[in-house]
Amino acid sequence: MAKEKKKTLSAAEKKAKEQRKIAKQKERAKSDLCYVRDSGIHGSGVYASCDIAAGEKIIEYVGEKIDKEESERRAWAQYARAEKHGEAAVYIFTISKKWDIDGNKPWNTARLLNHSCEPNCETWQEGKRIFIYALTDLKKDEELTFDYGFDVSTYADHPCRCGTKSCVGYIVSREQWDELEELKTAEKDNG
Ligand SMILES: C[S@@+](CC[C@H](N)C(=O)[O-])C[C@H]1O[C@@H](n2cnc3c(N)ncnc32)[C@H](O)[C@@H]1O
Ligand SMILES: [Zn+2]
Image (tube, rainbow, N blue to C red; front, side, top):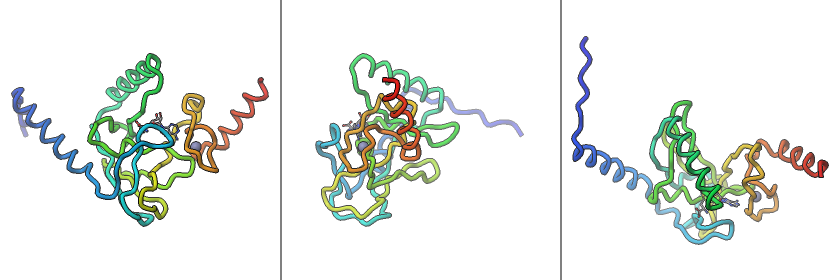
């Protein structure tokens, strides 16, 4: 069977398509369960607008679906910005071997959740979408946090200021805390 020819879109059609995509994302990013304000951990944070039970879906982490090549390019650009201006936030989520989500969009409120070594939320992937769920019962005005899951190899670049009793001092995936302790000890021993 002959392949159907793909329609070439005009500039106006492309723009309209992009606008429809953004409008959809904005709609999906809305949540009555949380709001944004300054955080004691870092910059802005996201807070519970009401008591929330463990297991409840709070908000979607929306963004642009990009392939690995584009993701790599953006990660390097972010790295270059960090080198030049100091801190730079990371907003890229892996959703499959082929695709990532770049959540660096102003309407993506969920991008502002900070990391904690005692997180009260978790991210959950449903198909190609990512959601933030409550991991514990949350009180109104409690800051929402999750484990960023950063790799231990870059620990020194990400000091943690979550201020919890369990804080290991760096933003590192809980699964790699043993390795982190070994690295910290080795560093101390090497003076
Ligand atoms: C995705 S942003 C989170 C929102 C951020 N607070 C803001 O205002 O843009 C991630 C950045 O926030 C900072 N951050 C998040 N959690 C942190 C923590 N526990 N300790 C120190 N900095 C943290 C780091 O600079 C990290 O790269
Ligand atoms: Zn911490």
